[in-house]
Image 1 (spheres, helix red, strand yellow):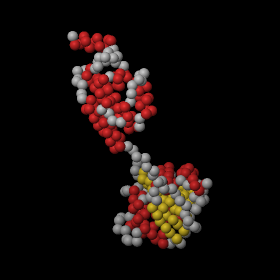
Image 2 (cartoon, rainbow, N blue to C red):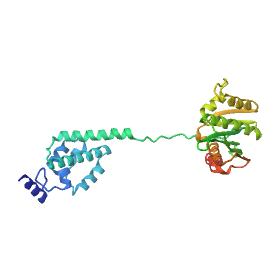
Image 3 (cartoon, helix red, strand yellow):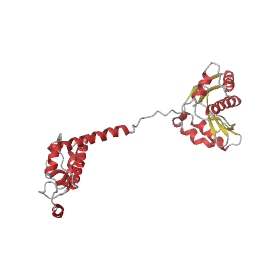
Image 4 (tube, rainbow, N blue to C red):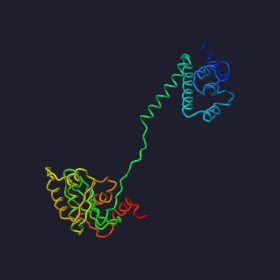
Length: 294
């Protein structure tokens, strides 16, 4: 008999909870006395909204127009809770106290907002360091290294640039196998210093992006690592120059030397460009100094 009664309610479209009106979406979510009991317990303007809507879509549109974002979120979550209860009762559940449904909607919304905050990807403006031209009559000597594990070799990239950002001398060379990145960078640094002297530059600002190597060059203390002889060679070459500075930069300010080091994969020994743009990295050469061309 109970199943028959349920079929009759479904067939005539009567609301399964109040059994007084047709079960439309608007009635289920807003007009049913069960739903009204829940909305009566809500705070703020949601509680004070009146009826007279044609359908549920109009109700939502009115809410979107009248409510603040936080209130609208609560309204939508409360609708889901009301609808969930109707489905539960249809499948044998019991009606819950309206105040519990109001609290559940609030708790669900707070849980969602908390999770959204934890998972949020905060957009931060990262300062990207760009290559800067040398001051006065000095020349910037940027170096970098690459390790080619598959080829049992390393790569060296060096570029010497003037105060206009023009490449005065560049080098891409295949190097010997190395044990780690520090050794590769130290080799590249020494090769850069030798290259700069051979090309006739006497006022040099040396730049690299390896913290260990740069600190070892700057330090006046005797380096006791197995690479100490390389650092001593670099310091001896630096002492022969008329002026010498060294600084640590980020990879973004060392992109040309980095590109030349990676290009060494295609080089049998070494390639040198004098007073000419290194064609394999010409795009990188100008991309990191757009302000020089303004």
